[in-house]
Length: 332
Image (tube, rainbow, N blue to C red):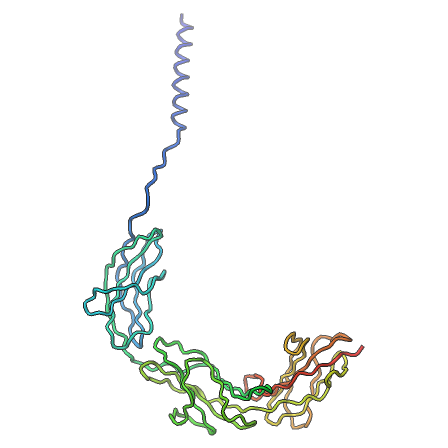
């Protein structure tokens, strides 16, 4: 009797245990929250940091939402402030509005947008003008180089761009004599490029002096760059190796002197225009003939190579008068 009771009691306990295990192992149901329709908080403390010379810089406190995608900047140019239109979407917490009118009062507001496309409202509105207060900075790294490659005769001017939001372009000044101030009579061109090829007066050996200034949309002009000058030099005439001549593995390269040159740039290559193997500079001298020993790796016997010489007249070492290329074969 007692044994039957114990068996029945044990059976009940096992049944309860297995029910508990099965129930305890059931997974929790995942409830789909549906699409994200909650917009992020609007950007706070919208502030105009700077406004002048054709640009307006504004900033705000960035949001902290994990799914924040960026910010939409709106602008309105009307006095009623009821025609805001989006001008840009940014991921930063600042925005620079460029190329603005000097006299117009602009209004701005900013909203936040998340990865689901939900857009917040705008918390603040700011207004600003960008008057023309200062002249641009003058261009940097200005250089002048004559060029004579047998096809063109010119003096090439180049400079780096001025980082001005209201930049209109650059005035280029030229004179056959040195000058220190911008004179409208010396201005030869206004350009929005950062280079200019002067093809006037293509005579060899005639020096011209140049300077460049930057000018903004309001007509304010920067100081001049430093004055730079150069002339168009003659092309060196190559002497040896002659065309299709033979030369040793370390040839001695000779050419006729160019009176205007301060030094020479010499190159040896695998073809007429590509495959440069070696370059070297040779100082100018009063001698009629200038020479330099090839200084690269040994040239292979039986192979054909090309050499060229350029006269250099400017301190930056750029070629001026560029010779024709000569072809030669290395001796076996």
